[in-house]
Image (cartoon, rainbow over all chains, first blue to last red; front, side):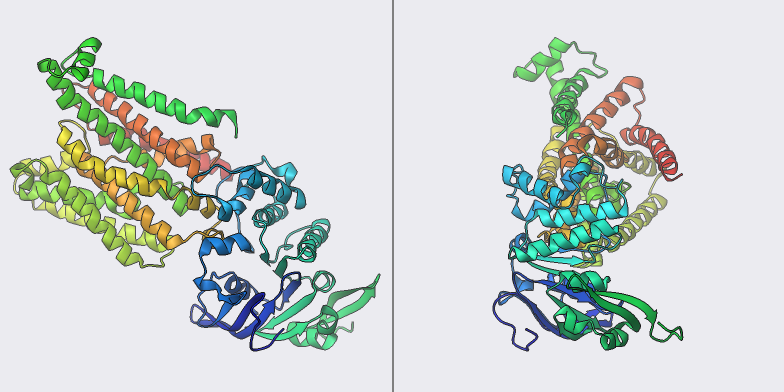
Length: 270
Length: 331
């Protein structure tokens, strides 16, 4: 799963090294995601989560190594065919024109469009499903630039879902959402994974990562420091080493929670 | 889709046709409508046929084609740069086309044969595109493209000023200045035949970027992850603008503000979708330039105003309202 030779199934990074503006953002990262699993990407700011997601989406040219989708180098695949299967949702993406929310969400269907044809019934149905799934159907006719940050985040998630991708890469999809919608979005993403798709999502909320992800990948300083089931990975010692915090951990109804409590370097007893 | 949007294109198209017909009726010869109609359809009917077919028809056709070019390229550039202030002149094409044409005036080549002027303009536009694409590089972002455009525009403006400065006679300088103001008077069917093929190719290239422009509403990363190859989109956009605006500037001089005002006015009417704005803006541009050219001939028939002056007089106050509205929006 974290081996040197990724299998011909799944989405895999092999010895991936990425440089951004002369700075090494990722060095020699290897990891793989299989269909049907939800993987959480965690790590402190600047650890390389966003860069890894962008590289997995084929948006970055790596300095070394490569990303393979079912054994094929992603940078050499036809962009549109790739887009029909793999969606990338950037953090802080925002609409530039006040077009209606429904039309914005419909952009997610772009990889499925045929040159100049009008949107087909299948497209409209997929858009409606995405609106319903994210609870944004009520916003469908509002201008996309007149939404709150949380509403915008959900509309953009709907945009990514509208393409009905087999692989979804979401960078902090719950940032800025209220608790209800955080749980709602995580349940949606987990539902995608249980229905056979694959979801890779960067997260800062460790409890959400522990509860909803099948595996977590811990990034630190541009490399992978640990991979595995959340319970095994999110230990006191590792949280202290990676994030520099002491956490309160425990279980509720058989599910783990992780609440960062104090900075490891602070004198205050926890 | 809202009901208003369905009738927008037919309404703009109809209005443009009416304006085109009106444009054929206006002129110092004072021909009656039925004379004009007869002159258009019959093979030979003397002076009237000459006036309508050789003077008014090419002028009106050029007004439509140039207006459509400016509206279409303005809408495409605003969509690509995601900036409502972008206009066709931004990537340096208009300035360079003007310089190319001015050089033929300066050297006297335009006096030697009539088509030297538009040919010089098209040459200038092509040189500008090559320079902009070389400067911006293959993987340039939008900011680099704007900077390259501004650099080429400044160079063209400097060289145009140099040509004015060194003009052999005051008369030559005046000729250059008048040409730069932009006008459609005295253009022949040869001008139409020369400019139209370039414009048509440019229109096809620009019309092909609609879908990618929609995706670009979400930014460059999102457009790429939706499967659009942005370097190819940029080349189509820049080449399309260069060919169509270059040819337009080459035959008519610089006609400002149309490419800025028209897309901006029509954007809310098409639901702010960049792809829907392209055809609407092309028709709107054609309508505006034909009307402006009628105004030019109707208001001061003896000492014709320059078309570029009229569009600037319409466009500048529009800019003021833009600024005021933006300020209110922020307050």
